[in-house]
Amino acid sequence: MEPRSEQELRTILETIPAFVWTAGPDGAFEFVTESWLERMRHTADDVLGWKWTGMIHPEDRDRVVRRWRESIATGDPIDIEMRARDADGIYRWILARAVPSRDRTGAVVRWYGTITDIDDRKRSEQELHQLKEQLRKENIALRDEITQTGMFEEIVGTSAPLRALLALVAKVAGTDSTVLISGETGTGKELIARAIHRGSPRASRPFVSVNCGAIPTALATSELFGHEKGAFTGAVQRHLGRFELAETGTIFLDEVGELPPETQVALLRVLQERTFERVGGDKLIPADVRVVAATNRDLEKAVADGSFRNDLYYRLSVFPLQMPPLRDRRADIPLLTEYLTQRYAARMGKTITSVSKRTMDVLTSYDWPGNVRELQNVVQRAVILCEGTLVVDEAWLAKRQVRRAGEAISLGRPSAHEEKELIERALAASRGRVAGPTGAAAKMGIPRSTLESKIRSLRIDKHRFQSE
Image (cartoon, rainbow, N blue to C red; front, side, top):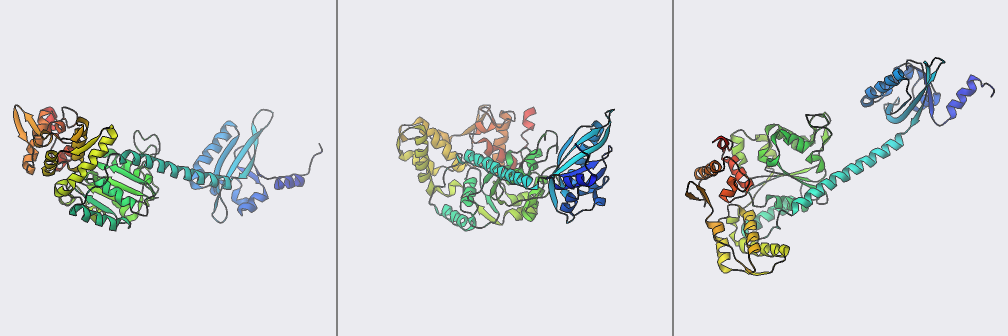
């Protein structure tokens, strides 16, 4: 082949689809095609030597320079993607490739490389990744919703207190206001939260439920707002928090009064600024999420004693709702009992045609300290045992007792002081254990979550009974 002139070679280089460059053995750029300089609107003086590193996006620069120096040291070819800035400050994705040219001794004497514009492909990949990520978030939230929905019954009843509550729910659902639902354990606060979500413009978006009382204190902020890889021991990869999973939808913060102080600060920031940061991150993430919170604590008292932030309380209680306990809506008990009876009978393949009059009288007169959740448990137990007619053993309700050293203590409706004594006796008898067949909750005949809530509200140190 005849030797070609330098001008002819340059013409060939300027017309091929890729942009070409060369560098000395130390990695300093010696030549870049004019077509590349025109494309990026730079001069040769802007890129020759090591000045080209100033064009690289700050987030990519260390990675690219480190990889380039490794290739210079080893003589290995390089193939790396990065973002390069043009004269207008706009970054484009490029693919840079280079191979070494060696002399007879094997020493690198020059690097020959190409630059390919891959901006369109990378942006398509990013859009696809964002779409997949959004679908993943929605799938996680949907699985969570499917799991949680089976734990709650429909809102059933026609009593005046319930009708008044639902009228308020109907008014606030269509807005984007933050809602704080207060009420005793077992009254159905999550049911109301779901009703608010279903009646809102966000109904087709995720509903993410979080039991703040069940999250370990040290992990509360990470659980809600996520964390970056390496943020703390055990953080082996990036973790998306519940707020990101609820993006464009609704997040339900149950037992919000149990959040630790540092998480309260992060939650206040979301409510005020609609942004948050993952633990270990420094990037502000926008939050388009409606917040519905719930508590069985007296948050005003918690504010007074310093365990809950005053400013957060007022941010949460933009629209407060008070759940009526079941004893205040006794007119709903017959309807609820009929509904629950048929629901559980259908699940178990049984036929229950009626509820005995005596049973209905007992259920209607009982105070239901565990509210609707306790009624669910009692009816389900009766359906398991009965055929034809539902009959509830009165001993399940009226004679729940804690026994210690032959002493019987009736629960009834004790005062706070009496209730504390009862719980402490049960904890002493169970050596501080709350859950399980020998735990204090079983001895008192109430749900574990109810007892845990009472222990917190009455400021009982359950751990001291372990040593006793």
